Length: 147
Image (cartoon, rainbow, N blue to C red):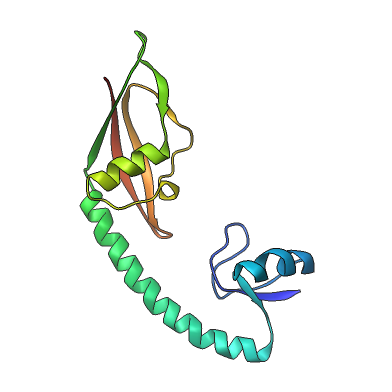
């Protein structure tokens, strides 16, 4: 089935692209979630106008993300936790904790934007990427210290 994507979908495509997908995937997931529409001539014309508006909004979002990344450059977030004698944390530092710390410091981000491969379980300093926009990623230094 030919569809047009309304949003970026990882491993499928970007907004505005026309893709061929299984009919069940389109009917049961993409259409109900509002992620895609069936590709036909009327929808294509309507979508072109809609995409221009989205591109303008996306350009503003990109500028805002770049400004936010400049503000986060060189920022160090300090998190404390209980640790053993060999510097291993009894718990772990998760992306939710990092997002909460950044938000508290005035950098509004969600846990989904923090690209932490696995929770931090050691004391030390770590560079953690934060995706602010699909084209903008900021590096934040996270220092994990003993409580």
